[in-house]
Every structure is written in C-alpha cells, then in structure tokens.
Image (tube, rainbow, N blue to C red; front, side, top):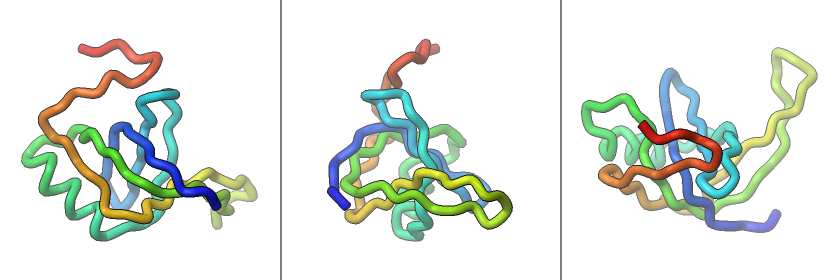
Length: 96
C-alpha cells in the first residue's frame, strides 16, 4: 500500500463518511476513523455540509457484506487538516 496525500471534501453522516477528491472528482467511502469524524464535526459547526480536508492515507478494496461487490475505501493514516472556511471546487462540479 502506497500512502499519498489527497485534498477534497469530507462528509460524515449516519455512521458513514465519504471523500470527494478535488483533483479527479471521484468519491470514495472512508474507513471508520473516530478521530477524523470528531474533527469533522467540530470543523463543520452547525452546518451539514462537506468540509475541505487534506489527509494522508491509502486505498483498499473491501467486500460489502450485503453484496458481492467490492468497494474502494480510503484509509487515513494521519489526522488530516480540515479547512472549514475554504470552498473547494471539485473537478466537474459547478460551484453555487
């Protein structure tokens, strides 16, 4: 597994986190990480919107217990840096 730093929008709700990479626009599931989830909740305040995150980690393919499909998960290996006041334009999106 090769660690790399990604920058994108992190969103956590209902025990599931997603990360949308700013460079590619691709969205990935994020492996459970209680420390990252707490930091996200603190950074977002009362908003329920994604927050810009730069974080080092690696990808794995994991089976979904409900299906036979394998999903790509992002595993942060460091805490990461949330930037709640910055707006990131994700590749292929139209900022509003």
